[in-house]
Length: 392
Image (cartoon, rainbow, N blue to C red; front, side, top):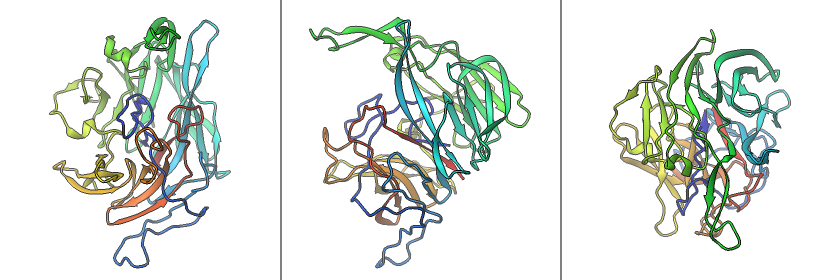
């Protein structure tokens, strides 16, 4: 599954490079709504341009109500975040998920606290409310019913399918990774009327390790990898420190909190000594083209008002191309990507940069095809939706 954020929900905003908030990008010249039709990227006067198969766009819908898809991927789900106060002074900054229902052909709200969709979009792994929980549900997306539960000895707060869909990594916690606790206060500068700041409930770094689970058998192997309890972790603003799969599914990684970059582990929990990768610093995490030759890069604009991102050679890490858009999310095929993009005429620091729209872009064309409607130009509001893409 490809996310607009890493599974650890480390969202980093746009042009200003501010951290801990969702990178908002997108707005494109407004076009007429195109619903449920196939779109080609080829311009009438551009010969030799390839087309993307099975493009379904909803440029009038934000958040989307009906399927958005292009080539090999589809928007399988999206989520919003909501701060819910608890009776004891604690709070939970949890996710509210909407999942694509193939039967109704619409995105429908769910009660799950966490979910991930397997490649092929036939099965979802789900976690119940009040994280962490001691079982993972495997839900049939054709019926919307959990077909099987995988029971665990330790409670988990996040789960992700491997790239081939045959395994899960589930991150274990002793406290809710999305919780904010009164007995773990953080000082917010300037939050009080006198500007001196005040204490507010904060996260607890309670990760204990991770499970690697065989989906067919339900066999689970636990590796102890507790969170590092330090000030830098607290500054991250979340107790969520999930593990994610590497692009080839051979290793797992976590975001480092002491410095930019990642730590890599094998599936048995052993730390791997790997050279620091330039692509580890790119947000969101890089994704590879279906043929494995290219990977998504970071924002490459900044000159002459350009809103473009780099595409890199997977072997050398050198820039291979630039495409319209500020945040590259998923590959539709070997030459086309789905991205967030802000309207170049409105995308300015402090104004318009967070008004965004999903678009389809190509390596061999400047043409931009809107896929969704616009999100609001506010980086923090309860209805700000975050897309999740899955190979279909």
